[in-house]
Length: 521
Image (tube, rainbow, N blue to C red):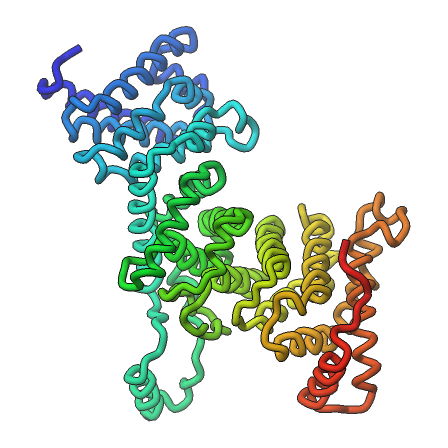
């Protein structure tokens, strides 16, 4: 092997990178064709790719190798894996023990600036055939075994910068900064101009402006998802950063703050341009939020007031209300769910993503009522978003019946609303929030009845032939109807104003509590 100071070594890596990018640029290559191109035939592929993987691991993990050479080898590895996609030659890199080499890149003082690219390589390796052979991928297991605190802090550092850059790219298209006194005065004066006389009503920023979003740095979400799911030490690092901000609000926003902020932009614009790439990143963001709330230690930290607010997307109408500070992070997570529920209801429904969103809401509310935590929050916006989803599903059941996960989405949405209505007194504060919830259920009772009428024709044959009480959807609807019918009777059939009906509902609840139809099972 040539010495490291031999320029031919660096030139060879650069040449291999160019050749790899060009050879793998075709989208319709088969695995055996890649073996023909690189090894000269299928029979020679083992020898070539085993040596190729061994060389990558040796150069990446050698602390004595020049920094620039290690960086070039890192880039070659990324180019190869991106080009190979999920073809069989990619499995050769799984056999090589590249994880220690990647960790050494992140840990190194001189190579730490390449942490983002090292994380990208780790994400590509861990996602190779993840859906059908996850247990056979050693990198998924190795991510969970990284316990070096300094390495994990560098992961957070790189992810914070990449996520923040992605958020800034959205904000450069449309400035959605919180209004200040000077900006409000300027907007008012501007609206008085003759050419603005008929255009003072705010409108959404054209969707076409976001067609190239998110930027490439958003790929940092892939390794972060794996760390959140599999590495308990990483969760401790996240909580450590949240606690640091609680003691010093002038620090840079923590990774959870930045991830939640980025998620709000991804979920707001996910389906606006029909980009599969944007929808894919929204899917990853939703799974990260779900992983956050499914961790007891993380969600508990999220329930503590945070002196540093989360910058949420306000680029599409209707915008979210501004929350008071200090503001628990868990409220910002629910805000992200509201944004997804509001802005992505289309005939081509992303049911699996909606299912993840509903599960995030369910886990959050279940934890709040279990711990009797009552955050100050604009709950009415969430109730309207959930009921809006159910109304949409009820009106399009025939069209959506063939879509995957639609039945499960309908069922879990009803179970969520059932949980909210039966456990409201355990997590809602002030009492007005409880009154608004019950009034909203009464107001939308006709939509729930339409949903019940079409439910039996939609549910699967197995459920349809079972007794009514065996269906969670029908159980939930039954309890909801018990509540809405009770308060509808109290309100009466006369034409009453909304404020009058709300006062009647509030009076009944203040006197007897919420009418109970039994706890959800």
